[in-house]
Image 1 (tube, rainbow, N blue to C red):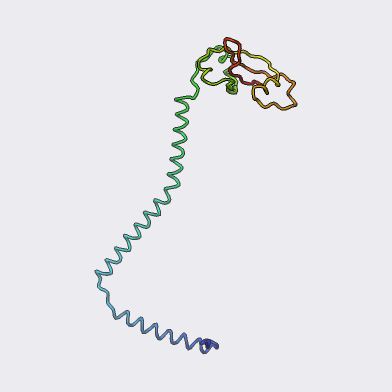
Image 2 (cartoon, one colour):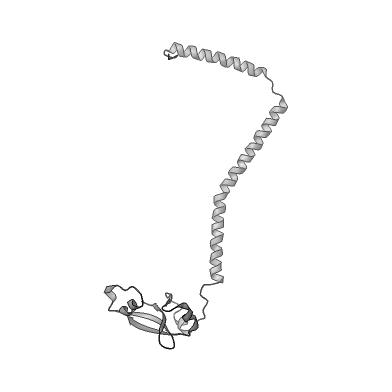
Length: 168
């Protein structure tokens, strides 16, 4: 296949041919007169399409903002639900009033929950050997196995431990 533009003269000849063809096309297009009504109809259709595209783009921009707002509302709703309906609704006893200033870990049940609901336990504070905790299923490191640990224990009327929590 032969390359048409090997020299600058060939390139200028090709440009001259293209200019001539372009001027013929331009003259033919000027001879066509589009009625004004068709031109107005096309401009209105383009304007409508442009408005639709802008509306779609605007709605896409609002979606992340709306998702953030919904997330915030959901979080506030969950917070209000936990304030209005707390998970643990228990009355204050003299022991819990004395310790209201400090946050204590929850009690760990040592017996089935059905038995806890049926009993009226009493609470004892005691220092228990760490080795005793391992017999209840609590993991104890060997370094503190011989130490005493402070705990609060809920005890049944017969003296059996029902639940406990470690204080230190």
